[in-house]
Image (cartoon, rainbow, N blue to C red; front, side, top):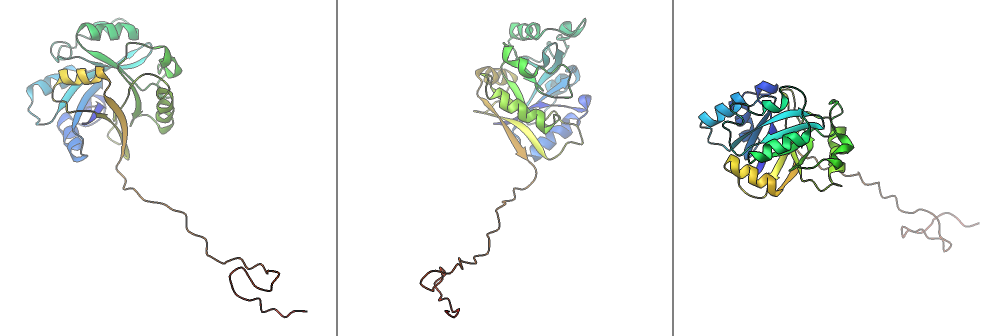
Length: 244
């Protein structure tokens, strides 16, 4: 199952829910998980009340002292619809360990997002090797630049953490899109949590641009025209220059 595991709605600068779902269908994506920055109530309530005939999941992206984290819980209500996660962020930026403990106590899990994004001062970068309690690390995101994504990919490949990808894109994003491939189908929020905790997923990069095969143009075959001692040439013809 191909899933956009880190999508934004218009609350974070992307399309409205319905438009984002229609766009996902058009791209051939099998499901979408909305994880807006510091917002979950409106999206979770809309998903709980709506009938989209499409696998839709909800999380929330919060800022911690060790980088941005996506909280996923098995139940939308009350944790996301009532934004009970705000008890973590209301006074100060929490430690990542506090966030993971909060999620685990509610049957959920946490993913690390934007680990090497150069535009984010709180990005952990190589400190991610010392982090624990995570179910996955984002190695590709449309809102991060190509260098940040490449460094994240190379670093996470040397760690024990599963890698995931997501769009987290703005309206003007285009070209490539990062997604997550799961080993099997997922229909409910609880099944998503189970699959994420099991680590049965992989990050993939999809391009909107058609593939163009490129190959080097062959050199013209001029043969080897160096004269041989027997008066012939390596291309099989005789050397007609007069002998002295």
